[in-house]
Length: 430
Image 1 (tube, rainbow, N blue to C red):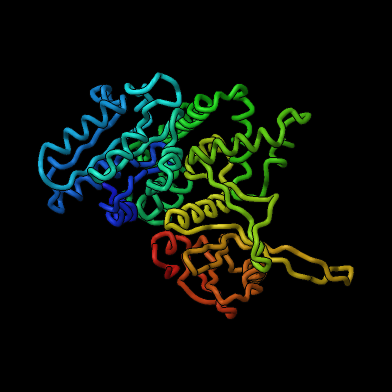
Image 2 (cartoon, rainbow, N blue to C red):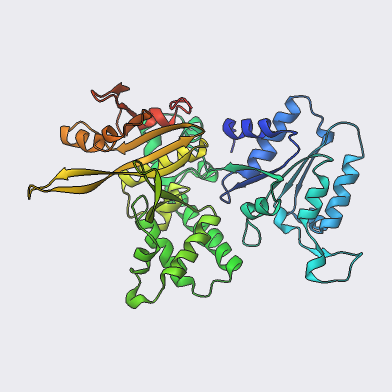
């Protein structure tokens, strides 16, 4: 791309963790910009701060020129040779580290328990340089890399472009940019494609030829058709309450079990394609098992999975807000509050009211509803219904998909435009 997108949120995370004695593990959906973040943004920033280019080593292990360093012993030797060449703190970046495969320990009998892996190499180097690694494909996901460092890895999760990052590149009318963002999402490469049909094709191919193939190879999935159908059902039910049991019921004659669906969902989550949001009982202050929501990490990928035929704006904007909240570092759950209401039969019944998002950050909390609009009095009452019954003193907000000035209702609930929210990372005041 000719215009650099300054991913300042992630640059700050990297700078905050610089020289902290940990191995920085950059995680996230494939093609979401992890390599670009390190190679084009962070390294250039280090150089601009006066760090010599001679003290920075970047190795892309997926390139044939670096094939020798797919051996962890060779990798370690090469990096130590680099460290010893000059004075000063060294910064080492290893991209696609899963290409570094286990080898026999030359000092021990050859068997699987005595293998040398890149974990050994990285842990041995962490005291000699500031080390950054990425890796995610069918052989080794970056989340798994983090787990294997056993407390010595420091994760930086990278998401596809947020709307503010996307808009900083495309400019123009905000509403037009928002509609396009909801349709094609924020995968960085999308910005280099001009023809909408080519964008559609890219996203469909990315899903089929990269993400699903990775899962099939990684987990040796035998019935690819069932895996694919499970993904289709999740895409159709995105932003709606569901569970593996309900999804399994969509298969004819019980041909796929709940456990199999649950396994497939775990594959999608660990590949960063989707994210699960649990249901939280606000009054009971506990999680509710049995129902949850699944959100796609990128809206364009979800639309591509649905072949761009189910453009549900309400679901898409809810998904977009969820992704934005996660990328800001918040913990996000789906809220529920039970109230007693008098029915048409004159009796009082227990009714569950939904709060789209319960956001937690340190000791603070915020409750958010997402709505197309609240101009109609009935719609306003519907969106406020759960919020006015929450009495713990934390902030409450309704985000509307229209150009309204920020204001508070007579119940003290803040109302603002979704676009204003998406473009203001500090609006919650955390």
